[in-house]
Image (cartoon, rainbow, N blue to C red; front, side):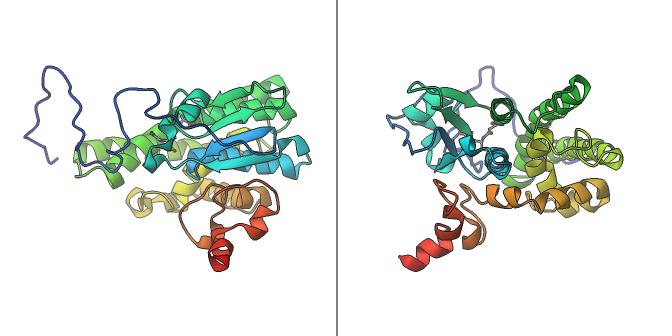
Length: 292
Ligand SMILES: N[C@@H](CCC(=O)N[C@@H](CS)C(=O)NCC(=O)O)C(=O)O
């Protein structure tokens, strides 16, 4: 194993602002707002402040699934938070999520003082309970669903913050770190593969918030869409995860949800803000740029 030799941790850690990492310009060792910036508010009770990353996509897929099920109360405005420009540190966003990370949801359906919800898993559960769907009520099935939902919240940081960071974003390659997280991500993929060998969906026969939480991360990984790490991790081995990921990708609500707040990829797949169901037909970037 190649060993970096020139770093010895000092007695006290200090903040090296120019550490060269991909997100060095937004990472800080302190919390709180950096500037005053109120959040915009649209016409619907549900206001989402997000970005089309795997954590953001969980919530837009959930909202589109609720609408597809006929829950008109799930109509929402989705506002774009550009995290690479530090918009998550504006005072309005920090009031919605003191942790300064997308996604954050404000629910005005009970009055002018909104319910705030942050952490994508908490948002999925909040919406599932609010609308009484996509989470089982029978205790054993509910426990299975909750277990996988919380599994995702605990596991994905090894995939994103661990493997993705050191394999794709770190300013230089560290064999020890890549090795550690590649091993863990392969183990996680094997956990899912074994589960999906015995079950159509993650929590059983029905599609639930556990699938919605896990799909953007691990479904993306096995389809080779994350960190250009598919070959490195030999993701084609996880055939049951691929079968499941393909089935979910075909759902109309998933196809819509993954477009919302997306700022990368083909222009026709990018709907930067969503305020109305018709926006999918009229407000994608290809159409907006053609009009401009
Ligand atoms: N555990 C959180 C993680 C959210 C998260 O990491 N969001 C990222 C984008 S995917 C973010 O906003 N990063 C901005 C920052 O770290 O400053 C959740 O699931 O909601």
